[in-house]
Image (cartoon, rainbow, N blue to C red; front, top):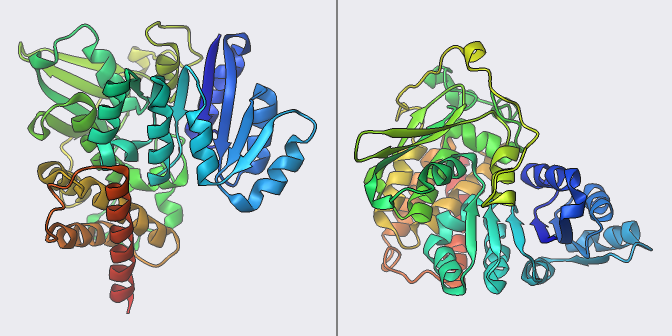
Length: 390
């Protein structure tokens, strides 16, 4: 029986993970589930899965969590320290699906016992890729990608020699505004940006898809996870979102991973690795699909991609700055404090300002240095947005 922890259980990735666990309950022993403010769902999942402990990141909701779990024998805890403690509990397989920079520390802690970390938290590799991958290697832990794109690359590379790889092509849907007039993007609303044409995801990642910031993050992730150079990484707009990634080899071959719009494929692959087991996902009818389309991403429409190139070129703590500025700008957009196109402009400004500070590119990446860069970039981002509004 596989011991499992789900960090970020109440989000979309966490819920899809739990759906797969529920389909084969005798195969899994759930150690911990964690969430944020959706306490009702967290309580239900903890009870249904007979978890040892349930943790909310929101300390103000601890009493509510305890009340909901009263009489079940399930522990209840809250706060950042409790998340770390839950992540540190011995488990065979840990899903890292906490959204945002907050997922980095628990993910790092989860590696302590040389476990398998299923990584859905983009920010871990963007902000601290060398730290996380280095710790995994040192402790003999396995990191499996759960982003559909990186799972696709991983699968295409099974049995292959990484030195034979010429290029890695990450596909992008283009988001909600791939055909929107560029001049109208400045007036896009939060509600419009929260609707994805293909995928059913949370609001934040859906908006990041519309700006292509999620794809910018994935380009950086590709470099860190697969240890390829930035010059080998490409992105292409593929509106159907059926090909998740392609790997090009030195003999001219392209290996493409094709699958439906269902995160349970990538999650299930990681959950069952190295085996393949039957998954409850759609089987594609290629004749019905008829055709697949591709186009080069427009730099004017998606400035986030150029920022990702800059981050990969600069290295060091630039990824931490980039992610912090992106997260903070998104917070302000959702709150109505800045416009849709302002987000990329502000992130670029903050990155440029921070890069003028001595040592950012060559700094040693530790959890403390990443946290410091994150805090500085967030403050500068809010300052930049406030100054722009004023």
